[in-house]
Amino acid sequence: MIGFLNTDKTLSEEKKKKPQKNIITKMIESRYSASGDTEDVCFKTTADLVLEFEDMADGVTNKEIADILNADGYNIRTIDDKIYWVLYEHQQFPELDHVELDI
Image (tube, rainbow, N blue to C red):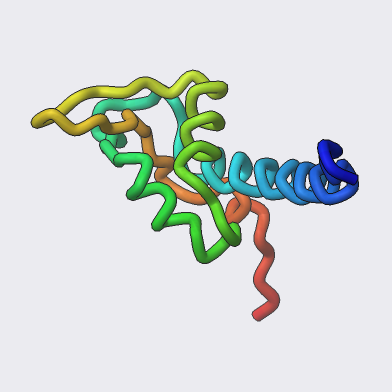
């Protein structure tokens, strides 16, 4: 089969990437937003975010993080010749608002 692409392998890889992208998007949304109060602002590189999320999303890449942040309207700022994402941290994790404890 010279000259043909193994489409089964390509399709299975794409199917794996879509759920991971959704997981990464949810993790970012649970911690950060594209706008907020000045006291909540933080600056992180794409590499910082990959390290932050790599334990939760296997094989997360710089490109995946950058694509998600770009699509969600996050801004960048250059500080000392390094490019940083402008992120606004949530004061608390939204999913923890609905936790009921049985004591």
